[in-house]
Amino acid sequence: MNLQIKKDFLFCCLILMAAATTIAQDKYFTKSGSIHFLSKGAIEIIQADHRSVTCVLDPKTGAIQFAVLMKGFEFKKALMQEHFNEDYVESDKYPKAEFRGQIVNNSDIAYTKDGVYTAHVKGKLTLHGETKDVETNGKITVKGGKLLASSDFTILMSDYNIAIPKLVKENMSNTVTITVNCTLEPLK
Image 1 (cartoon, rainbow, N blue to C red):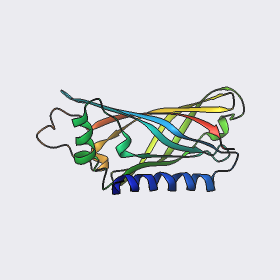
Image 2 (spheres, rainbow, N blue to C red):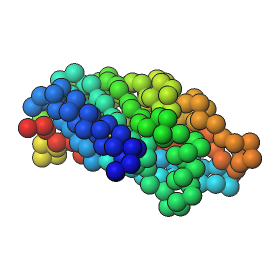
Image 3 (tube, one colour):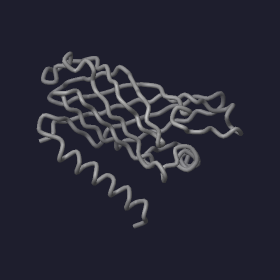
Image 4 (cartoon, rainbow, N blue to C red):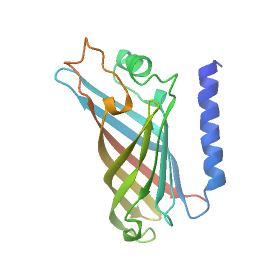
């Protein structure tokens, strides 16, 4: 097993152990959430999916946290995936991205009653070694004791010190739209 795989495995184990020790029965959890990102430039469209997003939500406080390993993003073109990991987000140096935040209007969400609720979320996104404030609206659907959390928001690559090489700067966009979808279940 190579060193990077061992590091990734250790990171996942640590996340799960931390989640297990801090999550009580009244919290919701998933390790199979998804993130899709899209950046539309003049010539180049860059998009990828990640299907192993870890998320923890505390309905009592509205605290929410997401963690993702950067090498887990899948692209349609292998070369694009290689450039993403090596040249843009530098996955070996910055192996994960993380969001820690709060559902500001948490009292408006009835976590035990089926329905669709608007969630206003504020927090900090750490990506590529940079941490920035993020604020967005999302949706929490309560159905059969599970939560379906979803949101779309936009970031600028330059805010996270992700440089676009001059050679392709005219073809690519600095703007990235991120879509998050997670089905969370009560931790038992």
